[in-house]
Image 1: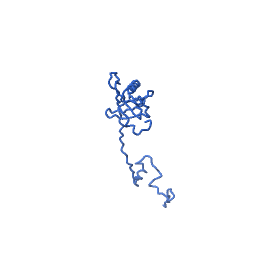
Image 2: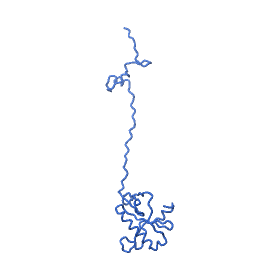
Image 3: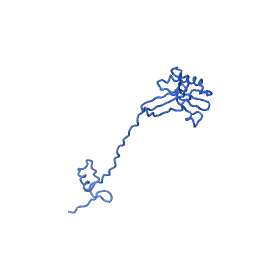
Image 4: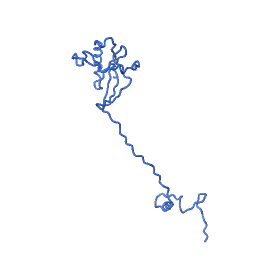
Length: 178
């Protein structure tokens, strides 16, 4: 609220009764949508859906004029409501709708709202986590089969079970005596 009033929420009233202010000009009571009193000032708002927002300015002006004549508001400075500092967003359970309300871009004291069916957040189904499987190292027999190309097509000739290894990393040559 303009003065940072911590009790502002308790000073807001909806459907503020106004003697003789019926929209239909029947002489019956009318109702301003929202009123907020701060000190001697009474702020008044008219709330309209986006499709009929242009009718709000005239209705609000008529409500303020009638409130100034109504004895229950005697002594109050009655003015158009101030702009909302940010859009108000809310969920209406009865209609399953999300409502967004903002100040009218040009008409002070008019709150314009849009409503749309609420869309539930997407349900995310987690995929099962695949546990890593450690494959056993090949046995000597598997290495032998590999050397004969039975298990794989891309043979690694450097790991040959038929060639013994020397301590320096190459094959060992053994002379044969015949």
